[in-house]
Length: 189
Image 1 (cartoon, rainbow, N blue to C red):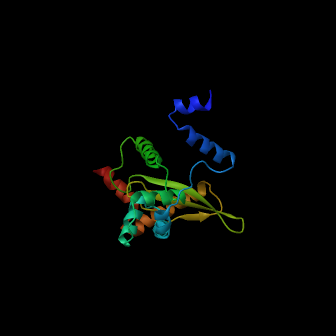
Image 2 (cartoon, helix red, strand yellow; image 1 turned 90 degrees about the horizontal axis):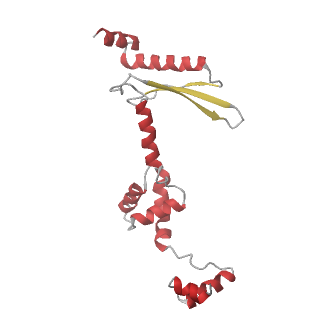
Image 3 (cartoon, rainbow, N blue to C red; image 1 turned 60 degrees about the vertical axis):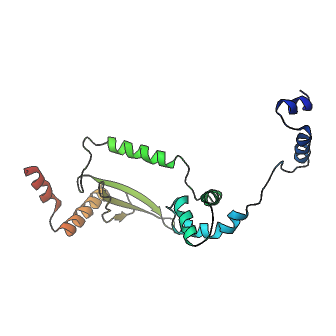
């Protein structure tokens, strides 16, 4: 297909096509990069708020920048955060909802109050000298309360038992009686 027919078919002026072609052959980009004065002007303020509060989304950062009396659009804040890699992908919330759905499906009866279901998990942290520490922690599923962590260089059944015992002792310190009494009282009702 000739260039003239191609340009006619896609409704592009042949002169424009020749200009783009010459620019590409010379090693330049056919278009851009365009100046971004609004982003450059607001970048420092946006990054200051975004780095101070990494859990915030672009709307909250935008509101705080506006509160600092800097007129900037929401889209400018979003683009700035995307350029810096500080914004979560769009499908992030969908993934979180799916995970929550799977967690809820794990229960025959969903917990309705605190201290009905506890979760135990191990986390691993490397030290600057090359060692590894493992933290075992219990948390209440319903209230998300974290009991004290058990720290050790291993992650075996003894560490899990120690973590649960530490959580039970924390429960007793908080409520003034062991958890076993609560369980017996609920069973007798």
